[in-house]
Amino acid sequence: MKQYVIYKRVSTEDQGKSGLGLAAQERDIQLFLTGFTEVPYEVLADFTEIETGKADDRPKLAEALALVRKTGADLLVAKLDRLSRKVSFIATIMDDPKIRLRVAQMPYADKFQLHIYAALAEQEREFISARTKAALAEAKARGTTLGGLRDKTMRRNAAMQANAAARADRVAGIILPLREAGKPLREIAEHLNRAGVPTARGGQWQASQVMRTLERLSAGMDT
Image (cartoon, rainbow, N blue to C red):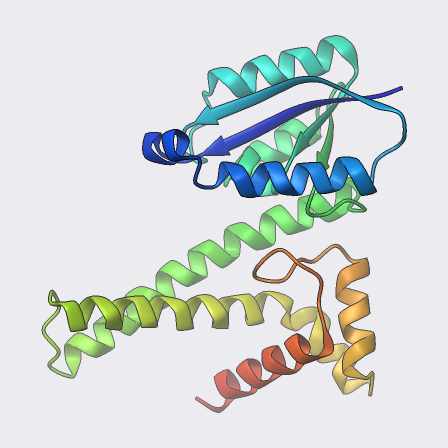
């Protein structure tokens, strides 16, 4: 029988109390268990932690990992960043021969793909931060005074634009060569899905999403 140890994490105490973020993780994990796992299966334990993903010292995660090593069960998380936001930490766990990691949103991803995705996600966060700071600096240079409601909206819009552009840059290495080779949008979407690359909302790629990504990449090249 397949056995799992589930680990869920939210970043703040308020999220933990209100359930924000936990419901989505629980949904994804249940989708994995009902549609992507071996049958029969058993959940040995379900751990929930309220802690930042940048912290390595997490008691609940330590308990989960200890149980995994003891029983041989798979460690199951909803998303890779619920385990950690640091690629070095994720790599250390995946290099442990007594730990097998499964990610609900990437049910077919192997160890190599998880390594790549962790590295890309870390680069994406760094790029988003740098691009957002650049956008705010440009706004300030134009004489915009930051601080009011309008300025908060501007900062939010700048962050959203930077986020979208960064996601497009992250998959450019896959999408652009395929498009240049004459592959149709639907086939490119299927390639991304087979590679275990999720969309911004963690779902499956469609032709329309590939087109929007290509448009963002084209706009970035024109600037």
